Image 1 (cartoon, one colour):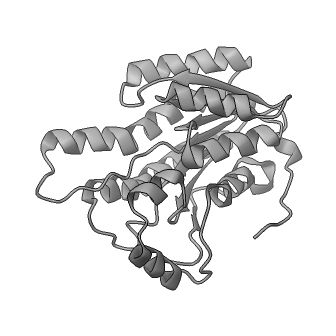
Image 2 (cartoon, helix red, strand yellow; image 1 turned 135 degrees about the vertical axis):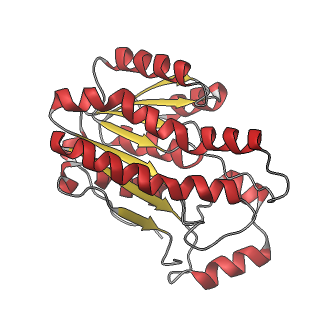
Length: 255
């Protein structure tokens, strides 16, 4: 379905940091914020996909990229500092998007796998927030948007460490919202449903899972990355200035 979508004047010129921005939902975030006139910096390990994304943006839209493994916190801090310099100032908005929903059984999880998955899906959200909070304090406020998932709300099996990490995003976000609220920094949680990215279509979409998804959602249409990106725009804009510590689910009414 096509539609007419909002433009947010408050996002023009704002500096936005997006993790996992080279593909999937993250790439749509980059495109949507850049289209609003924001100055976007994004992090990813896939330099090829990042370069292709930047090349695809219309003239006049600003996006800068830094390659990094988000599990390496020292490297993450350096990458954020590099983007801050490239964009000419501190960040006003952080979108903690990066994650991997690889399937795994209970029996195959080792302590090492647990730690690696938590580092992949949870830990960097905190350290990104830590790295940009002083930017936002100096600016008089800001917005942090942490992506969770509706998978744990639906008691989805087959990826227990992933669902544990995504449920922990709630506690992290609400704690940060309390600590950063006096500085007018909002922290909210965005839950995508089953978004039809190329990765999802290639790895897990089957006729059976498609039928289950359509039956579970109140609105049976497929969800796409822009459906999530447009909610992030609202949560980043001044229109949501008094909304914090809240959860926003974009899943067609499945949960």
